[in-house]
Length: 212
Image 1: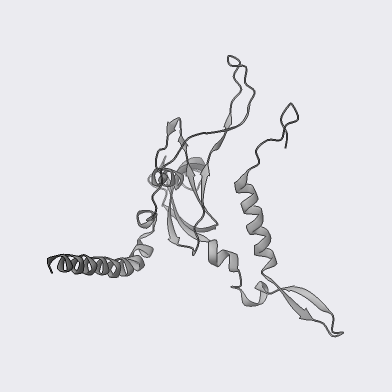
Image 2 (image 1 turned 30 degrees about the horizontal axis):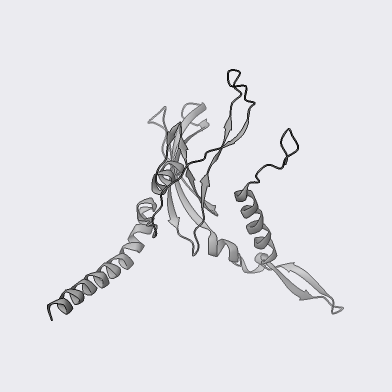
């Protein structure tokens, strides 16, 4: 992709990453099988095993999304589950800059969408809130830096994709506990209790060592 002057534009790293994962996802599902003549052919093993998606098991998250009709309380809330390969961190929230990674993730997990309401018999605005229901072995977070910039007659700018040049702070260890569903929190509580006890025992041992 080039600009008006023929210079190469900066390419989308997220798109490249997603293409790599998609290619590996398909390739790692393929297995070798010999036919009656002894010739080797590639087969899709996922059709037999049902759970042979190594990329999904390593990088995939499951989100539990709750949708509530913002225009009618009579419409029951809807709960759905979806699989994704990454979490997003939006750096700009309606011209309100984001300073911390956790803040950007929190905003990205909430939003609004328009869909058909059975109660109202028309399209309505639904508020969607997502929680992480399954954590991956390796977590990828996309910093959403690009947005669509409208044409400005005053500034002489054309409409197009623009990049937000802003630093976002992030911790050395990212704790996703507050972004998890209630069922996942119950599972994590067991490990967190053990970890807290280990830290407490280490603190006691350090204090006793200083006293000696």
